[in-house]
Amino acid sequence: MKKGRTRSEADHCSICCLPLPLDADGSTLFKACCMNILCNGCTLAAANFGMEDCPFCRVPTPDESQALVMIKKLADAGDPLAVYNLGTKYEYGEYGLEKDVTRAVELYERAAELGVKEAHYNIGVLYDEGTDVEKDVAKAIRHYESAAMGGDVSARYNLGSEEHNSGNYDLALQHFLISAKMGDEDSLGMIKAAFMDGLASKADYATALRGYRESIDEMSSPDRDKAKSLGFEEILRTAAHNRELVEKTTASRVAREAAALSAALSKHHR
Image 1 (cartoon, rainbow, N blue to C red):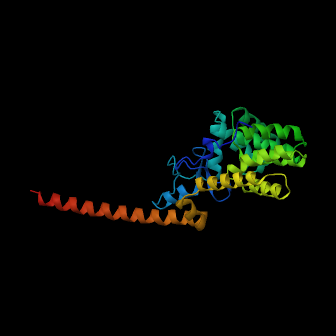
Image 2: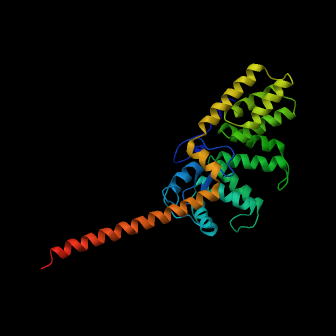
Image 3: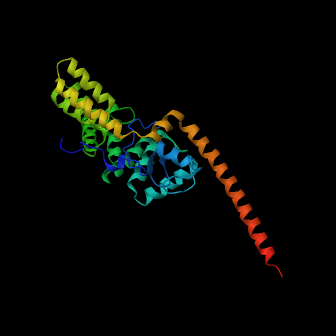
């Protein structure tokens, strides 16, 4: 378990460089234009300046059909994250694609070979659940292990759960300690439960709690807190409103400069 004790650089916002929140729903935004995941704190900061385009690459925000074209083009060029993201669209039938788990697995496997830890995790979940593919726990664990070594928090938690369910409580505790220190609340809860059952020491729980709090602090910022309180729809409205103000201010300034230039030219007219 020497590898995967910290989150990778890919788990950090490409703008503020802070670790991305683990509760991705509503806290982050995937940008198909540049294959980046940005925190909503940076999206809000850009919105305050009236920016509705991608805050990272400045490309206008595409609709789903345009985003799919972008993802496919990058995937065809061999971009690992694009291959992975195309797989997610097939798995869930998004962006106008029909659900095709077989195709999704093919793309995940390709992305996993290219080093995308999330692809390993998604394959692991599919084989672990056995709903859309034939259940294969051994294969699921292998992919969880690959993802966990890359710093995937959810994969690490799932490994802990597998060991716990198999009665390997000491090994489960080691997995949970790692994921708790990376900010996973469920892992912290499992360590607390283990402590209450006499399967973990007080020191184990104290260490996990301290690491968990430190990780949460690292993922926090004033902009992220404000973005969370506003909600994503309000952030979009803020961007649109501020863009209108910027356009009006710019138009007014241009008009004043044009009038001043005209006045200056008229003084020199012969």
